[in-house]
Length: 147
Image (cartoon, rainbow, N blue to C red; front, side, top):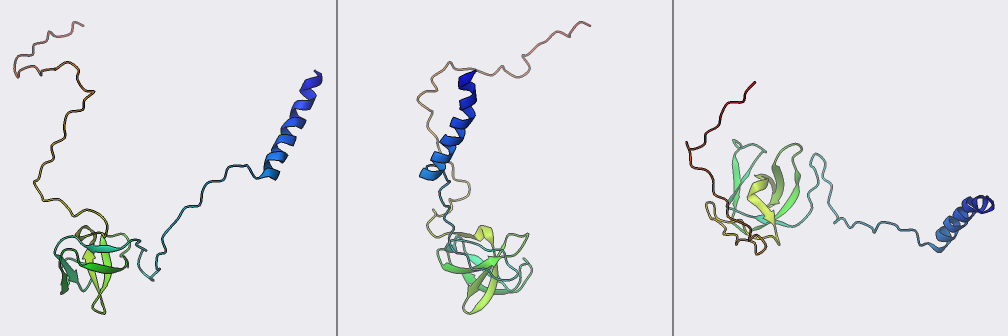
């Protein structure tokens, strides 16, 4: 009974000591690259280049007039993303043009692969279990469940 009176006091003393020492764990600060805020556009971070032969348009619409073309690998100055769409506003030759997001890639990322290319993934070394064959079509028979 006597010890149970001191447990809350010891807990408070331990909490005060930890707070005084500064040993309480704090999450590390999260680094966010600076992003320029442009009115009307959502901010986009990173340095971007044209991933494919990109067409710049006068407006964020596939039917808008073409104002320029970007060859693959051409760096672009991203102004921002058109809200609720996949169109990106870029600054090119002193004017603002619009390009679809899938036509851009981050500067340090790998180039997109060729369509139709296949990748062969080797079988895992620890996947040496028994081989299971599927039953041939039309050879599966089952009796009806009695009711």
